[in-house]
Amino acid sequence: MTKTAKLFTNGGSQAVRLPKEFRFEGEEVLVRRLGKGVVLEPIEARTWPKGYWANMPHLEEQDWSRPEDAIPPPIEDERDLP
Image (cartoon, rainbow, N blue to C red; front, side, top):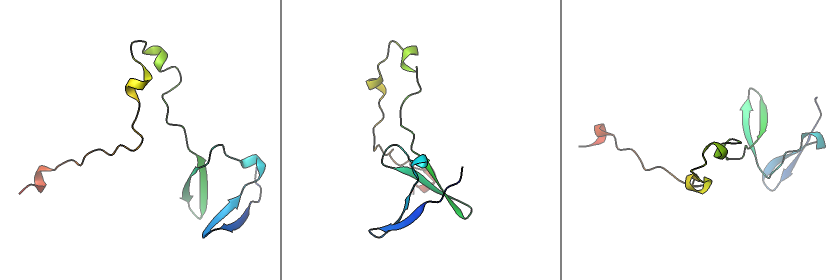
């Protein structure tokens, strides 16, 4: 299905008003270029696969929660050492 969407300016940014049939859930989408076009994709929730914890009865999900903004420490390369 192809429809036309309206472009407008919001603050200093260009925005697109999507037709109802193309609405996304949530407040953000991923944006990438594809040739001369732009692709919008929903952001998938960062959760464990359905049924994962049912197969791990001795563990609880909070034992394996992911830190939101964790940045791994830099890896020192032996070649960089004096």
